[in-house]
Length: 201
Image 1: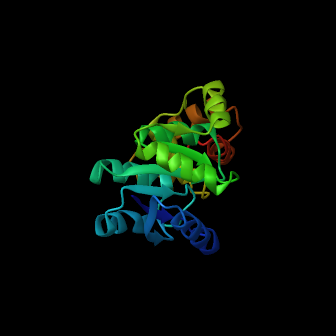
Image 2 (image 1 turned 90 degrees about the vertical axis):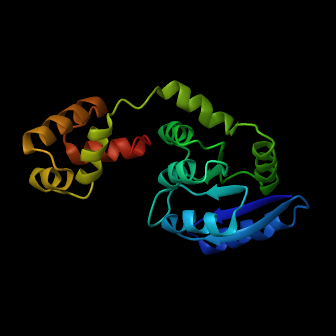
């Protein structure tokens, strides 16, 4: 029996998934959460073997949570289940130790099969997404460039970003200029939007 915890912010989707997966003889849902910042505590409390994570969660993204689980409970298997099949997300998920990456538009039988394969030690990735990720190439942004773009997405000024990241304003401008060039956009806000669209943030 593989025990599961589901992290999904849409209540109807979460409860439907839990109900359908619980109908499988070899799967048991032992917990559900609706926020990313609740996942680690729930895993430590319930000790599921596998966590199903959405990417877009309030409190913390599924990709950030996956990295936290890798560091704090390395034996916990993680499968991303998302509507956002962006190549950049797949690369970040794999870097965070995720063992499965599937999109939500498939049948629940397919998800159950993916869970079983991951539990058996396989790496399971949506084939279309895998092909797209290979075609897209690696994320060209550095960690600091991503930090600057995250701050820029909310319309922060250069001075605000410099204060938040403990950098000089000129350093922020340099990182922003590099990110704008790499995303082939015209300004920080456009660069942030493009990077998010590609799954780089």
